Image 1 (tube, one colour):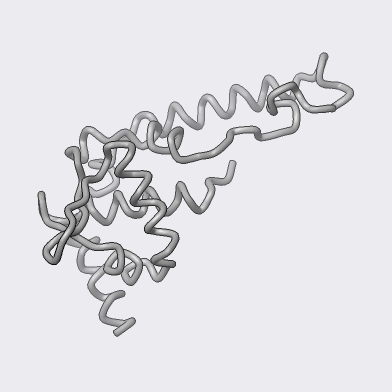
Image 2 (image 1 turned 180 degrees about the vertical axis):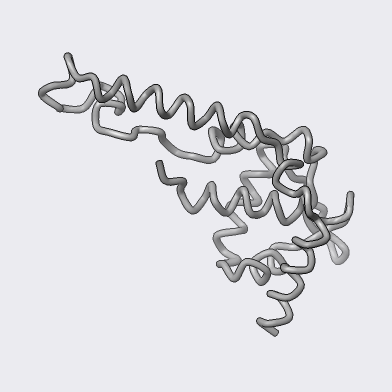
Length: 150
């Protein structure tokens, strides 16, 4: 299974914010620079993360974004489920079952369904805290990337 860029960027934003000192504000441009990705994409991602209650935004000159929850409270599996637009690995997973002629007796769809369930169960075992166990090293890498771009 391949995650969409949207989910990838969502997880990267959370990792970036999770590596910050607690309560420290960041901005979208800073995150875009650190990862060398589109600010426009990140604007959409951060908007959705805010709607999901995972980040909070502060407007104004001294505004920015930060985690709305502690990293231990943000489950990776739940984030993936909320940010992925579909989990139809094959045609028969689509609503209505698609048009595959062997679908009624196919064992592949059951195997793939079980694999997808296992995939998500593994992600459910991780929180953002697990992904940012080395915050000072992450911050150092982010700073190096931002300085390289300048």
